[in-house]
Length: 354
Image (cartoon, helix red, strand yellow):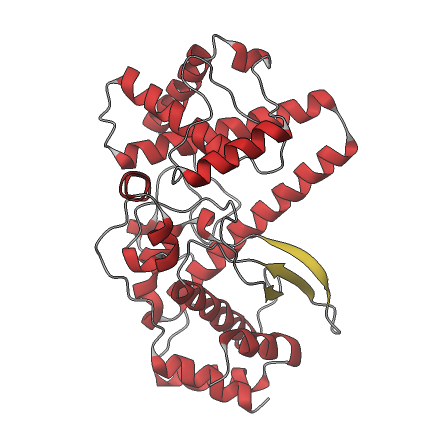
């Protein structure tokens, strides 16, 4: 059986007449495509997020979320003595210090911290805001915030939320820091990073939309919601195909199980086939995504609290017990990562007729 990657390339690069016929037949057999994605159950509307199908109309954050963000901002100002707002906090880490910390981070099983609450520091000079250095600083801030606010340090759900708010604040701080220093090259790199983030968000929503289009895929929606945008692989432009379709190269996060990666690629393939079968012209045309093999220590932030089989076994085994159980906290649940065989057969058989 052909690999999912080669199948996707064939569908996207050579046409999809066979897939159109197969999908049309499947619709007649009971795989009903929802014509209007806006007609969704009310339970899928989450306050403070964009509703799927209405991505351009964000909803206002709730009062509690706004107050939580304000407390994070206030605690940061308190922790840094006001330096955070004045841009005088130490924001550049030398290459030598950065390399030393990377070694300590790896050898300690991701438990070493670059600073304390008394000498708090972050690094804004590198493109990746979520560098290992800043991940360590985020844990220091989370400890400080939870201690001052009287929150149990073992409340990992709350910790994750605080860290996400911290990184949101850090991104805004870095944007301000870059503008203060000017520099076309730095600004261009920042702009490219923002564009990649937009593509990650679009990729997440496209995959989630597919689970509404095909009833047999509904079971995978909960996993997508847990992985979120941060679990999507970032990509970079890598040329244009013969028919003018943009080609992107991407590298899956090393922490993610190959079975999850395979599931996500199937969702991409099915979504592209469904779009062409309905001859839709709305939205972005399917692009070609070339996979590069994942590499250890890629610096990509893992999503915590997922079922254990969602993580790569080798990666989990390489972590220290403290880091694995406290900060990754994999659940004992087993997640269904299989696409129904009839859907796979339908797409693969159609591809062979191209």
